[in-house]
Every structure is written in C-alpha cells, then in structure tokens.
Image (cartoon, rainbow, N blue to C red):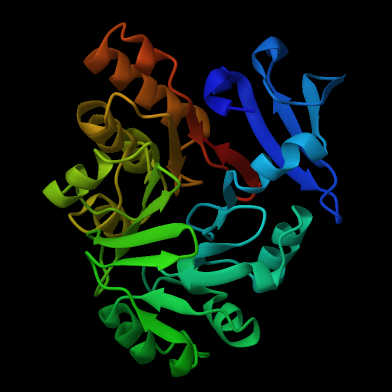
Length: 336
C-alpha cells in the first residue's frame, strides 16, 4: 500500500500489527469518514468495521516488501514527553526517550518491536521531556546513545539527571556528521534552543529523506536548507501566539517560549514550510504541540491557510497530508 495514493486528511490513526511468525501483516486505519479503498493497492483483503475503521491484511506474497517499509512511530510528542521510532519490521532506532521507559517498551511491543530491534537512541538535547528514559535505554537495554559532545557534557553536569548513561555506551554525532545504521543514514544538524546544544536529524532510507526538527528557537538558514531536502517533514508547531499571550503562563515563561531560543509558533512553522519546503513534499507532521497554548486542529488549520496563501491552487500542496501528532496517543505511519 502506498499511502501517498490515499487522501490522508480524514485519517486519524494508522496502527500496524504483525503476526509472531511474520505470516501476516495487518494495518488498522481509523478515519473521520469513509475512504476510497479502490486506491489501496497490493493488499490481500480489506475489511470495513463500524465508524470508518478498516482492517487491511497482507499475506505471504506481499510480506517481504512490507518488511522493508519505512515505519515512523510517534510514541509521544509534546512538552510532557517526546519519543519517536524509525525503522522497518526488522530493526530501527529511537529519537529521544522523554517518557517512562516502561511505556516506551509497552508501545513498541504493541507493534511487535522489542528491545533487540532497537539499535540506537539519538538524543536531541538535555531537557527532561527528551531524556527521561535515556539511562534505562542506554544502560538496561544496552542501546548505544548518540548526541553531540556538548550535550553529553551538559548531561554530566545536570543535577536533575541523576542516572547517567555509561560512558562506554555514549557516542558522539556532531552537527554535520553522517553515520550509517544498517540501511539507514542519519545526519545531525544544529537547531537553536535554550540549551548548550540541540540537534535535529536527517534520516535517509532507500531513497526517502525524512527530516525531524523540534524545540526550535528561531528559523536559521541552516534549518531552511535542511527543510528543503525533506520528502517527509516532522517539525515543531508549538503554540498559537494569541493563546499563549492570553494564557495563564507566568510572564517569564511566555517570554522564554517566544524568545530567540524558545519554540516556534504555528505561524512561524507555517511560514517556514510554505516558503521553503520542496514541491515534492509527501507528508508533513507537526510535533511538540503545547497542551495549554495550542490544539491539533488550530495547528493544522494555520498550516493549511498559509499553504493556500503561498502556493495557491497547486494540487501538490492542496492534497498534502498535514498531521498534528498527538501528545500521548501513539501513531504509526508507513512512509513511501
């Protein structure tokens, strides 16, 4: 199934299940309304359940291809915790581990991914909503942890991070460096934020380029250059300016959020994407939404409005899937 052939604007969630003996793979699609199943190719059977919920089943003849599909699994996204899995059905890696490790493992196992399949953890920056389970993943799971030298040094100095990752399991990936992990290539790049160092990541897999950038203080030329490469873009859309201005946050916190090293607003993210993402962008995921000062509907509406203003009636953009990632509801997507 090629998701790019589907109208994803009405799809709320896609969940993957794979049998233990890998004889059958099943996708569960939940939509706001009925979808055109005639556009779904290569599937053995389709079952329509109630409330626009579909089950797509693949048997042996299609399973080999599906084993190599690129999986993007948003386990958690937001100020209360961030964790993302990228991989295929055989192996993959995490970006950030900002929620309880038991919850990460529970969600991974729900889609038949277990600890031996997690080959690395990439850490964007020091803040707790990105590092809470870092030591468990690095030490108990024995997973290599990658970040910049500055980030590791900041972690060493941080009193609130009581359990550090064993140094033998810490590896440097400096900005601009590119490493290989099986069929994946991961490149780190600089993202401005109020920490010693903050990283975004370019993920390349079998001709697909995914860019993830979160906790963005302001738009830099480097960020623009990276956004232009993305086939799929996962980018922060943290707050609505009016909601933040009129909200109950203390003034100092509001100033931090809107400051040069804080977080991007919906408007800022929309302007970045509409003006600089390439015309061939296949999917856009909005991450790290504020619970207090934003909503998924508002973030998506702001993005679509800006795209319409900048791109007009260009069908490549009007049909672009724009998805706001849920804070605590895991979501699985296959990227083609």
